[in-house]
Length: 195
Image 1 (cartoon, one colour):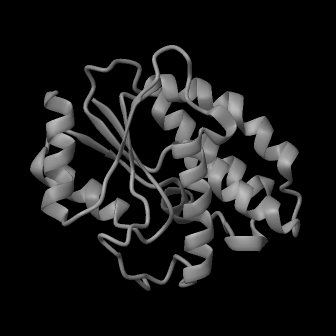
Image 2 (cartoon, rainbow, N blue to C red):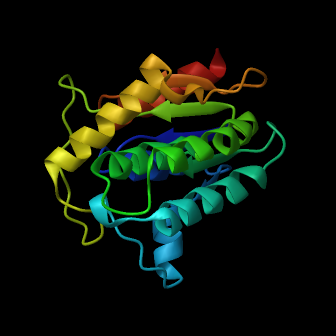
């Protein structure tokens, strides 16, 4: 399976990826694009400060990694999905503070839709009252609850309300929403794969 973990920051996505690989060591872990690019010296900004280069380079990095796995026989889990950069770009476009605007976001959609054909499963981790996740200060991510909530709302529009219509009409990945304890999250993914 080619699995991508998607959603707003500080929701336990990276923890889930690490837990999955620990339980399933035959899976390859693909690093979150921000962290991979940050380690290469890219100064990527967040919130209203990010621009087309910041989000575009992350999306294309993620796309290149997804496209490197052409067969559903390959076992890989991605920390983030291409859809994530649409959500974060729309957040910035809504504020109108940089060169990211609605036209830029719309231009990302066909590319993302095409890339999604190379995934088998997208796991969306929403903010949930049933299982709240505390904001973690790791020195990288912004500690800004309204920012996380606004981005999460855009993710929910994309995945629940089909905003942007990102899912391909052919070879679309399965989409599930996930919350709960670390063990429950792993068990739910395993159940979906078995089914």
